[in-house]
View 1 (spheres, helix red, strand yellow):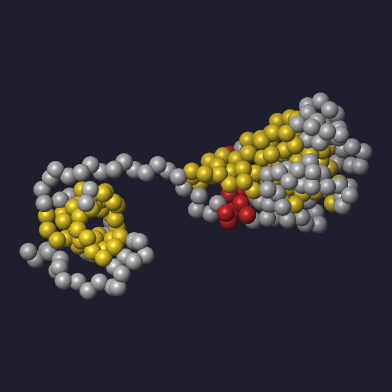
View 2: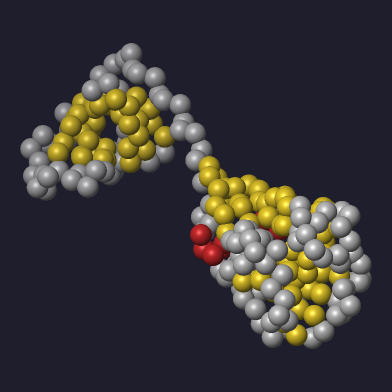
Length: 247
C-alpha cells in the first residue's frame, strides 16, 4: 500500500476531489473515466500512471481539473478512449486601413482610387495598407489560404477585361516614397464595374502572417493596361484580405 495516496487532504476552499479510473495514458496526460465521463487531464505528481489506476482528481474553483495521484488499481474492461477532437478552423477578414496612388513622384491627394498603368499622368502605383493587424491577430495560428477583394471602377480605362498585376510590400502605412515590392503576381483580370475575391499565392499568405510583408498593391512597369480600383470611400471592402486559418 506504499503507493497509495493518503486519503486525508486539506483542500483549498471551493476545491473538490473525485475519483476516476485511468483508461489511457499519453505523455504527461491521462484519460480518466469519472462516473462514465471520459476526460483528459494533466498529471500533477511524480506518479507514473497506468491503465486501471484509480486516480484522485482535483477539481479547482476556477473550473480546471488535474490527476494528482493513485488511490489503487482495478482490472478491465475499461471504457474506450474518445476520438481526438476535430481541429479548430476559422477565418479573419482584414479591411485596408488606408489606400492611395503614387504617380509622378507624389501620392496624389486628389486620387483616392487605387490605380496602375498610365492614364496620361505617368505610371501609377496603387497601394492598400493594413497596419500590423494581420501579424498580431493571427499570431499562433496556421494560415491555410487567403483572398483579396478587388473591385474595378466603371469609368476608368478600357472597359474590356484588363490584367491585375498585384505586388506584395512591407509598409504598415503610407510613407514619402512608395513601398518596395517584395513579390509580384498577375492575379487575374477584371472588366469595368466587376469585382472578385482573388486567391493569393501561398507564399504571400505566409509572409503577410509572419510580418515579412504588410500590404498589397498594384503596379506594372508599362503604361497599359490602365485600370482604377475602388477607393475605400466607394467600397470599404476594397483591398480587404480574408485569411482562413487553423489552430
